Image 1: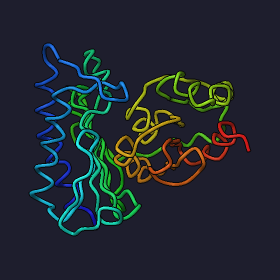
Image 2 (image 1 turned 90 degrees about the horizontal axis):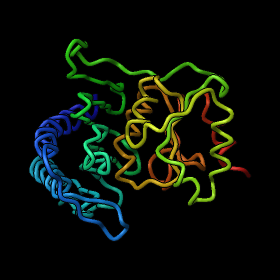
Image 3 (image 1 turned 120 degrees about the vertical axis):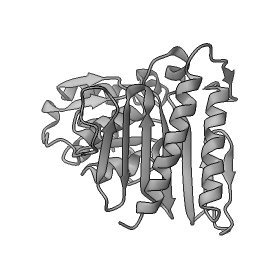
Image 4 (image 1 turned 180 degrees about the horizontal axis):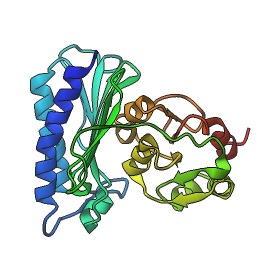
Length: 269
């Protein structure tokens, strides 16, 4: 498996970050607001710093792109087209600060424009999802009474939107981008909708628990780790314009069979 060592590295780093974030989630959490009015905590920053230190030591040639500290070029001097680790230290910070357990650390690797490794670790949920190109997508659980061995993931076989389940983050984002009515049209065309939100929506697509996940605005750090997991599970991950990968500023992930039909409702041409 071409990226086995990179995946093993990301998983080992996630172990350390999980210990830090779980410890930090106990008790009062001080919140700062970034210029875009999104929250950030000292734990977000400490988690990203930990990831950066481990990656800089183990992969000094690689560029690191993080939500909190931006871009650090590796010694290979090719941040635009080389190997880039993309990190979201806590995806779901608003949940994190409220004590809602649906938050995760995202560690992804880009080789050029291809997302080739992804780790999504949600310690408060007792779940972790991961994948590397050609190696399949997997999940492990630390919940008592459930199997502890990695379970291979596969998207659902739902073939008709009328039978599909859709997950999203919020209605306000669709409204802000002038896409509320198309999104509501998608929800009306499907069997069930729930706002599981953030990383979790996409991991549920990979597990075959929901069939469509979509958001009208996302950053690179929100998406890179998700892409290999969805794709290796047999799904599709594109922008709303249908461009594969994490570069479109928005996202839709499906089991593949529903992809074109879902996009057709969301984006009128």
